[in-house]
Length: 107
Length: 123
Image 1 (cartoon, each protein chain N blue to C red):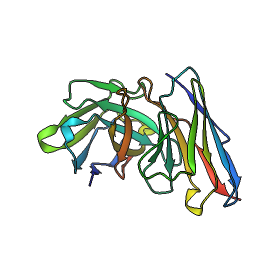
Image 2: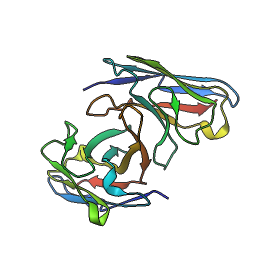
Image 3: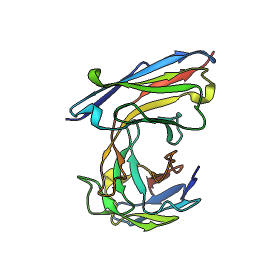
């Protein structure tokens, strides 16, 4: 089973700042990685797939990069609605594992 | 509009059983693999199980293998999760999720999620 480790656990930033979230896999997942956003009381929402492709309707301020074992989600300028928990997910093979999440909170 | 509506959650004693259902609408249900993903209160996400569009292939997470069974009724547009030998650590919100975002190389991703149903395992 591939383990995904996200860092940091919590990111405290102000609106307008840049957020950089990391996800490291215990073995290569090629580019088969997704990022999800989850707000309190809501289901997760797909942001990024294949490590760097934005899903339909996702604003351009969200971008993903990386391949193999190291991945990054960048939010170029935080909007108030971006404060949430973000999860990376491996879909290279079953089980499709998730990272433990990074909480982006208002500073 | 794609909709996934889970039901069947509730309070069950350790060792008990429960069946979750997910009613799907707004898309051709039989064309898509479907997943159950769970989230314990205040914690992260865990893949529970997946079933192919025709129901012929199923996979399970290590923590539920041998205790849970995923199935689907395509004419009824419904996904199921039969849970048995429930443990306190199975307590979670269970989400029904469509594997619907299709890429050119055939590696698909989870796109639509239901709102979840809470399973509480306690005596």
